[in-house]
Image (cartoon, rainbow, N blue to C red; front, side):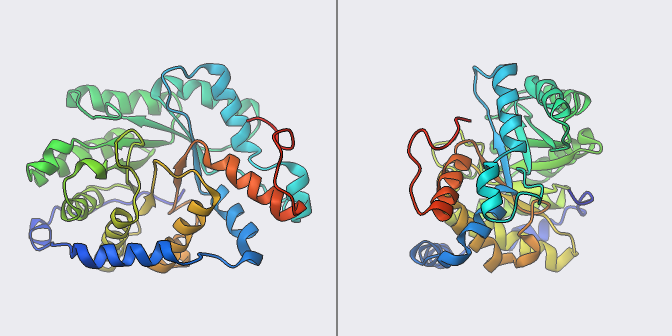
Length: 318
C-alpha cells in the first residue's frame, strides 16, 4: 500500500458549511445502477481487476485456524490456474488485496500466508468491532495487539454516538489516537453509514476521518441493517475528491457489506473510475470488503472462457 496519509488540522469551519443535496445524490445513484457498466469484451479484465482489490474476509464467531488457512490459500490463488492461462494472465501474480479477520485470528492468517510463501497483507478489524461500544483504552489496546501479531492494516469502527450528537472534535481526537496506535500499519476507518442518520452526517464523518489521518474510509462493518449503498458511496467519494483538491492527500475508499455478485463489482469499479479517475482503480486506493464475491467472479470468468455456466462440480470449493 502507499505511504500513510498524515491528515490535517481539524477544520470545523469546513464541516459547519456542509449540506448534502439528497435528491441530486439519489438521481446520480439511479443513473449508476441503470446502465451497463462495462462492455462484454472487457468484462474479464475488469473482473480480474476487481479480484486484486478484494479484502477477502471472514468475520464469523466460529472462525478457526483451519478456515483461516483456507481463506489465505484462496487469497493467494483466487482464480483457477487453467482459467488464468486461457486469459494469458497466469503469470501476472493475481491475488486478492488482503485478507481481513478478527484480531484473535491475525496470528493464524500471518502464519498461513508465510507458509504459502506470499506477502499478502493481513487486515484486522478492531476498536470493538462492529459496534465500537467499548472503552477507548480497550479499543486502542486492541489495535496495538493486532499490530503486534502482524496485522499491517487495521479496520477500525468509529463511535457513532459522536456523529449523531455532533461531537466532531471528539471524533477527530479519537481517530487521531487510532492513527497513533496503528504505528506503521495503515488505518481504514469504518463509518457504519447505515447508522449515521443522514447523508450530510456521512459527508461530515468522512471528512473528519480523513482530517484525522485515515488512509481509507469504509462504508460499513457488514453487520448493520444497511451496508454499502450507492447514495452513501457517492457522498463519500465526493468527500474524498474534495479533500484531495484541498490538501493534495489521496485517501482510499472501501465499500463493504452486501457486495456479492460479479456485476456488483463492475458497477463499483465504474463508479470509482467516474468519480475519482483511473488513479484510484488500484488496491492502494480502492478495496472491496467481501466474503462470497470471489466465488461469483470465478463463475463469470469460467463462463467467459468456456461459454458455459459452471456446474456445481466445475469449480473447486473454497
